[in-house]
Amino acid sequence: MHNIINKIIGIIIVVLIFLLGIIVVSNTYLKKREYSKKFFYMDTYIYVKIYSNNSKKAKKILNEVEGIYKEYHQLTDRYKSYNNVKNIYYIKNNKSNDEYIEIDKKLYDVIEYGLKYKEKTNGLIDIEMGNVIDVWKSYRDMLGGLPSDSELKLANLNKKEIVLKNNKILNNHPNIDLGVIAKGYTTQIVGEYLEKKHIKEYLINAGGNVLVGKNINKKEYTIGIENPDVENDIFDIVKCHNMAVVTSGGYQRYYEYNGKRYSHIISPKTLYPTNYMKSVTVITKNSAYADILSTYLYLLPIEDGIKYVDKLKGVEAIWYTNDGKIKYSSNAKKYEYKN
Image 1: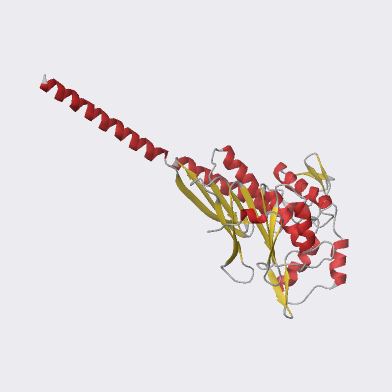
Image 2: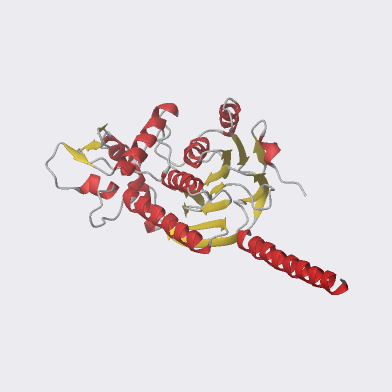
């Protein structure tokens, strides 16, 4: 009898050890790991980090994410042609005699999105400004001199209206500039793609355009806002999840002439860069909207911008002033990270 009991106990121990092994292996398999990839498109380094318990799936998704950025980079490129791609450069420089030319639906949607905000921003967001942008770029590339008023006015006078119809664009060779939207719009597309693939925990940083999903640790992400006055430093930290945090400023792309700094962000009203602030950061759900809104706010006096944001739902903003002070929209401090 004693031997039988010992055998039964032995069998139970073996079964428990076996089951414990299954649990350990199962937990190991289900534990999500971090996967990341870095690449360069749209004139900036883009860093994408995701979490998954499937290595093969994660690597495939990261490759597809890079493919999305590459595709939108080519479509929105103003300065280069690509084989079998009717992009912004093609729209301006094509030799077709057709009144309207058909373009990729993805590019059509980006252009349509940009046009929508011209009216909503009283003309301050204007993707038809390519001629003026090119004048300023030529001086920035030469690292000296300033365009004259007459040169800028002539460039603006010669701009062509963008007309869209049924996935086609009027072939009047408009000089389209999508710099105000391309990164944010594409980042939003990528975020929606990750969600569709059931990747809920992710972080995307596309050169000042940050989009985050849930945090793997069930906490909020902490995102540093770059200090315009001190390289590799931050002046504030925000905490959030499932949000976009996008910064616009004149401290990264600019040139100096006679001791004055001229940024790459040009006002369609004056045809000159504005100097109301050093940077503005927008916090909201949608990366495309945040990208456009941050540029719009950069083109407004700070107090006007604060009044504008305070009327919006689900949007907050943080300004870094020319004298190094920080200003907030009404509820922006709720996102501030505090140790």
